Amino acid sequence: AGGEAIARPLADLDERAEKPVFVVATANDISRLPPELLRRGRFDEIFFLDLPTAVERKEIFRVHLKKRKRDPALFDLDALAAASAGFVGAEIEQAVIDALYAAFNDNVIARREPVNADLLHALKHLVPLSKSQRENIDFLRKWLEEGRAQSASFREAKEAKQQFVDITPMAEA
Image (cartoon, rainbow, N blue to C red; front, side):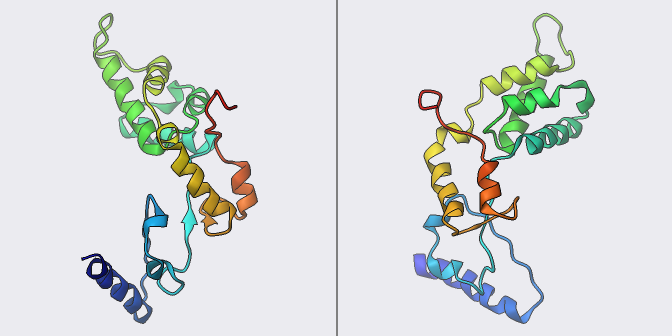
């Protein structure tokens, strides 16, 4: 079944040369994909997207606060970005949602608006993938360092590596 499951997507990728089509795909573990899928001509480039930088995390907070009709200017986005080092966008979004629930269900002032402290509290109670899957992230970062992928955010792998969010456990740091 494995060979048949990959045969149709391979045929579709081969046919795209006949049409003006731009194909984008994502994978959490590229090492498990068969080499025939990754060869040039099927996918022109393999990009690596690392954990969001502080600047990117600030923008992610801004997006998710606005999405929930909250004014980002009322929050200390620099402090939130610092506290969320190692978090991906979905985890930051969940922290915003958790903070909204906490504020709404507050025992002292019911249905209050969330504040920075609510978001910081939510972040402290989330375990990001950068901790639970640290070894996998290190493995994927090696792909970039070895030249097996291009950085999606930076022109050079060296620049990308300089921007890596430190995910070393405290005991090892």
